[in-house]
Length: 395
Image (cartoon, rainbow, N blue to C red):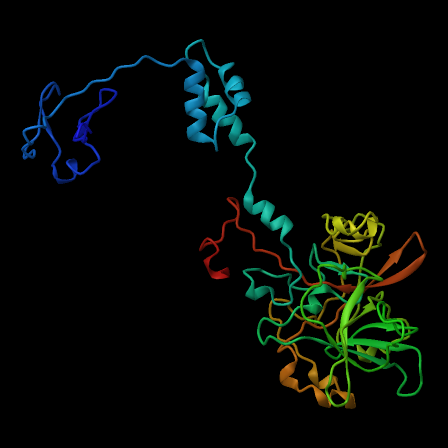
């Protein structure tokens, strides 16, 4: 055939080298004279009668500054654009663009993927030590998170250790038959006090009772749960252990008014004023914009319902647990008779306990209760403060 099969090449005054292809694959590098004007190839295959070896030379002048700029951008970006070429051509002299300045300019615009990841991850996590995180040591640490709503979307996620769900209890605070007020507990630990039982938001003919509920597995992406008054999916359990149809109850505000402090596992934390710069409202991220025009559905966090502390002076965490340990289970507190239908093995192996804080609200003139909201926090690994192993031990 008339097809050429490469053997070797030299370009831009460089040394000869074996080229790619079936002929060159069996060759050794050519031997060249000191001035490289003569090169010898050994053991070249003997060509057939219709074949021969040919030395072909190519020469071209530069394609111009525009073409050189395009070639440069092709190598260092995801592809050149007309605007990018025109901008680069304006630099340097008449023959060559200022590529060095272009590179230095790009370095000044460089953003850190890790910084973006750290800033936007910060997921709610009861088991931060299992997720490559350093974890907040206590609820008093700087940037600890707090919320006004009693139930979290995390409550609706099954335990990664056992694949089991959490359970919610509504009970009369002063004993059976006494009516209001009521206690809401998750895995036997107090979350809030209610002056009246929450309503089913999707079942007009059903009433919420002081009984035992299974928190529905998984997050319902058609509903918003992380806010006061949002819908939260549960299933009521009977004494026989059978489950009702999943229904939505209202996520209540955290309130400890009148609660016996003996029901709380840990001391309440004194938090900064809600209107101070030391208690920052978390109003971030868009979500559910396709579900309607209401602002209620357009944000991940409702303003002034989730906060983080911006100070190291928070007090009251003496004797509090370390989040990364996450070795807590309070199934023994679930002593209602209805629990006979749910064995201990069907509960999460561990569950971080409820830790409450109080903060003064100067707008209302009242002191409000908040619930500590454990979050994943990655260990620092920067040029200034690198991890000794590069982070291998946290993975």
